[in-house]
Image 1 (tube, one colour):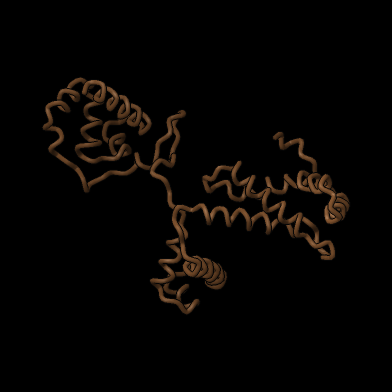
Image 2 (image 1 turned 45 degrees about the vertical axis):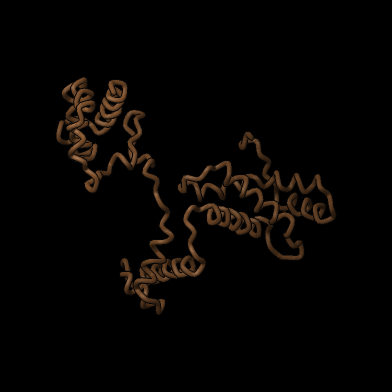
Amino acid sequence: MNTSHLKVLTDEEKRDLLQKTKAGDEKARGELIYGNLRLVLSIIQRFSGRRENMDDLFQVGCIGLVKAVDNFNLDLDVKFSTYAVPMIIGEIRRYLRDNNAIRISRSVRDLAYRSLQAREELIAIKEGEPTVEEIAQRLGEKKEAVLHAMDAIVEPISLYEPVYNDNGDALYLMDQLSDTSSGDEGWLENIVLKEALNQLSERERKIIQLRFYRNKTQMEIASEIGISQAQVSRLEKAALEKMRKQM
């Protein structure tokens, strides 16, 4: 769909189409929906930072638009867009909630939103960031319950989330992490691995040893050997590929 060619209806046109739609005119209903697609597009931009598929959000937003068209009361002294916007947003939020891999109970979610509201109120009063204790006190809740609720609505981040881009080479969150809990120093004693390591250049071998034997992050390795983190990432991938072929 070429969104630049979408029609924008005037308030008079919307009113006329709504009256025809209520009378059972399906063509008018289609024109009314099509004429408000720009409204859906503008609303889904609010959710662009959630790493959701924008096509999916657009389709869900259109469902909200259709519901607004079918349920709008012409007797109300209100513009159609004023009624449609919360309907579209509500549909999108339900979709995001229902498709979240982590299910949060309604009571926890409600406490989290009340906590956020109390936080905003305290910021206005104090002109500074309130503590969790102050938020809990304002709500009459336990500190632990407020802390749990606010943590529960924080969106999880994938280890494969790009956090930096250097000349087209994406660096991912997992590249920034080191694992000190499972360093198995015995793997270098394996003859096959030793032979594979020996086929690498000196720099590649050092990167592999620092990365997997000494559990250093790519950022730490880059600082130690004096190259960029993107270069470390490329050399590491190339070295691992050589080792796989050798083994």
